[in-house]
Image (tube, rainbow, N blue to C red; front, side, top):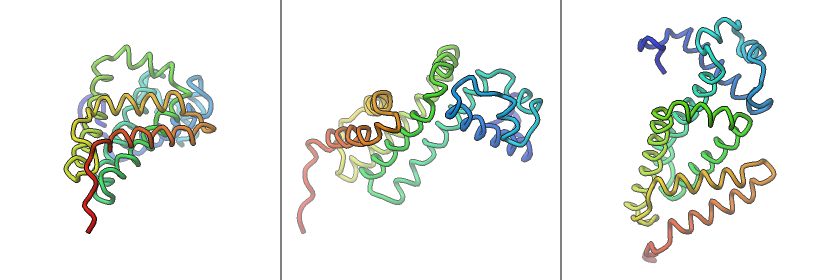
Length: 196
């Protein structure tokens, strides 16, 4: 992520930003959107001035957390596809996506406000996620393990819905069952592999 001027951040500034985002993610997950910004700065090992220079508003901090997490889960796709078959990669990715959305519950309202205020940014991150899902679906179709007519946006919306209705820690088993049902639907109609 570049600084507002468009130039890449210096290494020390990037490290401070990463620590701030990690500390803020923990704080918002634990305390909700009203988490203390001073406590976030302290947890990150920086002064409050550093936090405000990088993220002048709470909304910008929340947006940066969301964007950082979207970048992270989308970047996981090539590694997953390189290590396991595409259908298993998709299932593992969906689990990560549900976990990602579940950890953002504490800041859901503020994130919704930030995303609605910046429609272009919302659409940009949604497109990143759709591209990641499409890569997993295409790999599965090529390998013959997933149906070829699945629409990436539909799958993303289904996983998001699962996260909304079964995203609490005590509902993890239910979320896993729902993801398994979704995977069954994505395998429906795929000819079985020949027995050798």
